[in-house]
Image (cartoon, rainbow, N blue to C red; front, top):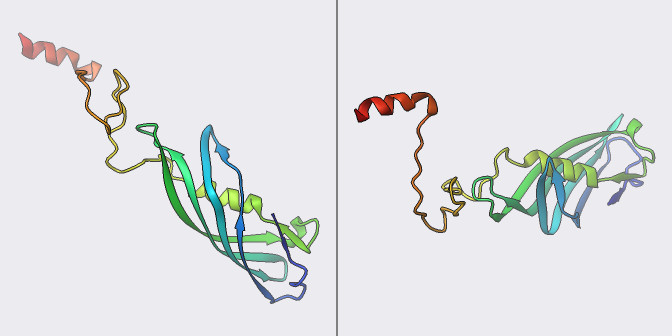
Length: 156
C-alpha cells in the first residue's frame, strides 16, 4: 500500500494517516503467521530535513502456532511504530510504500517461543497426546543418562 506524501513538501509539516490494510499471511523462518481480518494502521508522518519520520501503532489479530502443543491460537497485538525513512532511499518522494514497514514490525514483535498460554502442558513425548486436552497412560522416565548408574546403585 502506498501513502501519498505530496502534501508534505515543506519541512516541518505533519500528516495523520488512519487506514485499514490487508496483508496476506506471512512466513518467517519456517513459522507460518496468519493474519485475521485487516490490520488497523494509525500513523503520524513528519517531514524532516533528510527523512520522513513515522510514528504510531499497528493493531492486528495474528494466528500463531503454539510451540508446545502445536495448536493454533489467536493473538491480538498492538505494536508501536517509530521508523525513519531517508529521502535518499525513496525513488519518488511523493509516495511511500508502507507494507514492508508493517511486515517488519509484526515480525519483530513476535516472541521467540509462541505459547497459547503460560500454563500450556504441551505434547506427550511418547504418544503425542495433547496434555492440555487430557492425560495419557504413558510412563515418562526422565532420568538423565549420565546419572543412570546412580539409579542402579539404589536398586541393589
